[in-house]
Length: 66
Image (cartoon, rainbow, N blue to C red; front, side, top):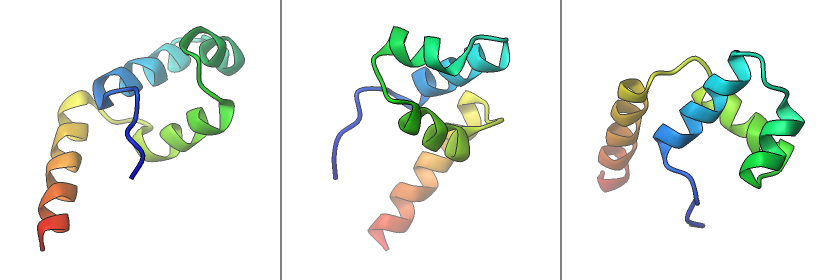
């Protein structure tokens, strides 16, 4: 699987900037990512906090072991 340049905490921070009123195109340009990536992240992490994202990652890792 392709390794991401951004951690879950960074992704949630970027999504938080968007919720605070920053435009998607400006965020994508600032962080060097595509708008498609942004919307994929929004679908996966939208409305999550950092602790919830860590819990999700732990569950995904546990399921991968099974």
